[in-house]
Length: 333
Image 1 (cartoon, rainbow, N blue to C red):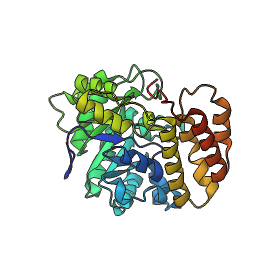
Image 2: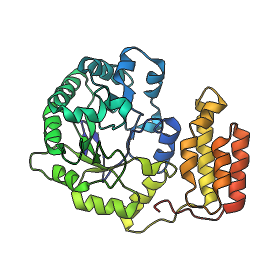
Image 3: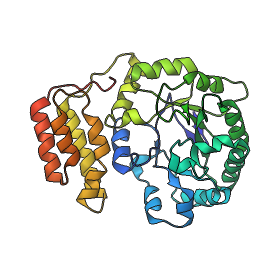
Image 4: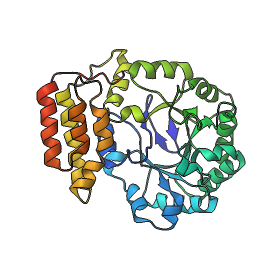
């Protein structure tokens, strides 16, 4: 698979860009377990044009990230072009355009998945960005707006014509948000259409190695993208790669091993953020996902989610090891 001059061997696994999730420490954990391609959190084009410090911080890249993309979103073509130029200065391997975010705060301004309702503008925006930068430009989108409006093939053809180097498709509509089941049938139809020449990356409901293999065989996509199933389970990339190679399912890590990973991710946050509380707040979404299905875990989980200091978190994590150390949580369930 090629994105510009970037060559990716085999079936590469992409970590999906996720707001307030794909920051430095989480990208590190996923890379450690075999994710091949990283994305930053998505960055507002308007904020970049205004030189907003927080948005620029999201684009800071690290050696371990590579290959890595910066993802931008917006509704104004001129602002998106300028944002792409700013992003290019950070030297990503490619720039990705967000045409898929379904959240109200994004689509109410006409950005993200709202662009699926104006395909000519989407195509023009992509073409202008491609012309404005020297690095490859890719895009991520959804099947369509709702069950009655799924123009994904037309979308893919338009973006290919605009010069986009690869396209990631989430197998849901905007209306679905993250509910229901991802429809990979349409992803496969795009991938196998004779006019489609660019790589197609499939995204949605990849919850383990067996599911990944089934979807890969069903569609023939060039790469797989994993998003929410990796939260609290960064080793899913290792598990998927192992299954694709051997058709064997790796056992889940024990709670003791999970806690070692939680502590590593938290330590990265503590070294990276300005203060201890910010580092811990960033972890709460992950704390909630790291220990699924443990019996009688509610009290410890609540304490973990309410902890305010590193010492407090560490004590609770040690309690969890003492009580559940050899248990293997069932992450696919």
